[in-house]
Image (tube, rainbow over all chains, first blue to last red; front, side, top):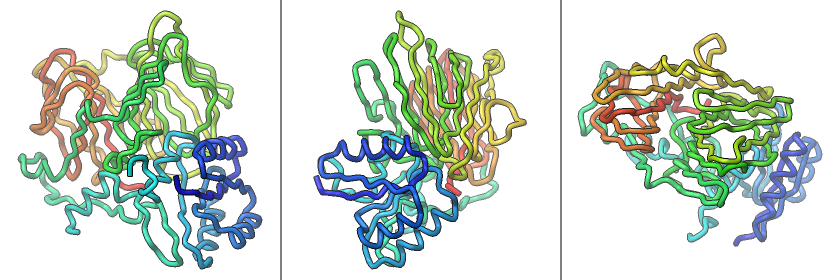
Length: 105
Length: 292
């Protein structure tokens, strides 16, 4: 399985930790939790990772600002607006960005 | 890609969440590829067979994804959890249609949800619900439960009974806005009001019949005798309709459907539905095809 670093940005602590647990249940996938816009921007600038996953509790302005920040980075990164808050859709969202990760592909 | 294939690709899901290369190397799972559907003929009411093929999608019950967790048997019409099929990602804003059977006394422990409109429809047995907003409830056949997960909610769902299974449909609809305040509701419906007609169970309007959600969607249940025909008028221009046969058999615009088949149809203003066996129960979902 390809190694992935997924930055999970959101406000709901229980959901953030659930997403981290689900992500890290796949060997080679690592989740970095970010809860503050400024800190998240700084982290992304230094460590852009593979995917920025927008979790819940963010304002529209925060979602817009972090997306604009990504556009300014000279780095290829996946952006996932996550829906559902758990295991139901998460892997499908990731597989949609990286179809080569689908088991059997 | 021609227009028709483009639309179909988007509707079937491989377009909506396919990584799109955009400026600065960002790949998005956003909805950029989805465009409003163009009605071929705004005045068309029903389709002939050739038109139907280009404006519909059939999901046979046997083609669904299946998960066997011992205590939980789940059939997934659309990709869910470990079932991933790029051609089965959604129908418009309808993202999840799970047909679940939970063993006696078992269930889903405390787990989170966010940013999803979640509708549960019990088919048999009693389902016990608890959530982080302080709601404790039991839902059973005839009830409809709705949760707007919004910024986040924790909940559990258990089979209330130790001597029989609980069977229910769980449906997830994308909300029309992210991060709304979480909300829970359940109602008990008069099932006699759906005999040989459709009974509205959900809408976007809190003042309308049934529960309400943050989306331009209208759900209906109907319980039909053999041979009964209903003409359903689509509520909103551009919406599609997804029909799920809970029991019995039906013919929808010429398409024969068996129990637990799903059939989506779009670009149509009215749909002819005929029950072709006794005790045919149908869930009809009239849904926005575009995620705003």
